[in-house]
Every structure is written in C-alpha cells, then in structure tokens.
Amino acid sequence: MLLTKIQESASKNPDQLAIQLKEGESYRKHTYRELIRAVASVARALSQQGIGKGDRVALLSENRPEWVFSYLAVTSLGAVIVPLDAQLTEKEVAVLLSDSGAKAVCVSAATRQKLPKNGAVTIISFDAGDGVLFSEMMKAHPEAPLPPAPSRRTSRRPAPRARPRLRRPRRRRDGRKRQRQRRASITAMHDSLPPASVPAGRLHR
Image (cartoon, rainbow, N blue to C red; front, side, top):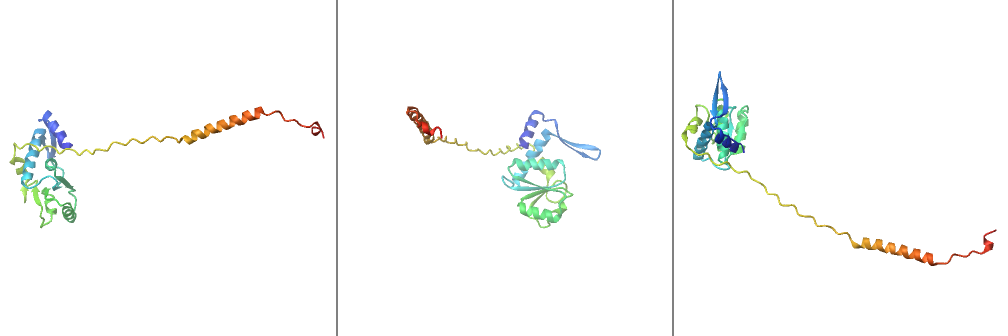
C-alpha cells in the first residue's frame, strides 16, 4: 500500500524531499517528516468531522500537494476517496457527487464554483474561501499519530482437491488374456491334426 511505503521512507529518511511543486520561479517543497505530520493532522481533523471507515470523500482539484495530503489522510482512516477530474462541468460534478454519496468534498479556488449551490456535503477548501480550511486542518493536530494503514484483504483460495485415480476395468485385461489363450489352443489343435490326404486322381485333370 502507498501509505505503508511512505511511512517506511519517512522512518528511514525523514528529511528527504517527498513532494515539490513549482510556484512561479520557486518550488514549494515538503519532506517526508512534513508529509507524515500533515497527513496525521488532517486525518484527525477528518475524524472529528465525522469521516470514518467506509465513508466517501470527493476530491475535486488540480494537481497540488494538498491533493496528496488529503488522499493519504482519507485512505488512512479506511474511508474511500472519490477523485473527480477538475475539468468536469458543474452538471457532471453534481451528478457524480450525488451518485457517490460523498460526505465531504475537497476543492480548490478554481473548482469551488463547480459545486452545487445547495449541496449537503461538507466543503473542505484548499484555498481561502467558504468551508473548512485545509491549511487549518494541517496545523490543528501536530502531534497526532498516523492511523495504522488498512491491511490488505487476502483471499484464501481453497486447496485444490486431489482427483481420484481412475482404475482401468479388469475386463479389458481379461479379454486380452482370453484371446491369447484361444489363439494358443487353436494353434495346438491345428498342430495335432494329421496332414490331409488328397486322392491322386484329383491332382491331374
């Protein structure tokens, strides 16, 4: 699982660069230590918002570090992430949010206007605006432990049953044996018979 791999990298190289995004002439950078802390804090904040295992959280945004933070935080809780293309229309977004049953949606300033006007979902904003500020969620619980990564479901396949060995019917062997015995008896009878005598007159006509 991705979260498990990130945890392993954070434990080995916490100060190594994990994410970077170019903003203008500079880069916005985050180490593995910062990544894990942000994900843990957001996960705690999401749980306080009522998000738990099996719940759906939509993600409607362009590529940015907050996209990764929210994705990892949601999945760490055992919840289901619903990624939506930032190029979708307002009508498409409304239909997908309704069909998915999402309890919350993460948006940016560019995608916030595509949400339904009277939506019942909790809005989590990556930028300043309406809804819960994602930046505040990242700082709300700096010492929160990261939830354990959900274990993969391993499907145990039943052991294949051994096929019973089919025995050949003994009739076939007995039949061959009888045929050999008949041939042997016929040969013995033929050898025991005297040679046939033919009248001499019949040899010359």
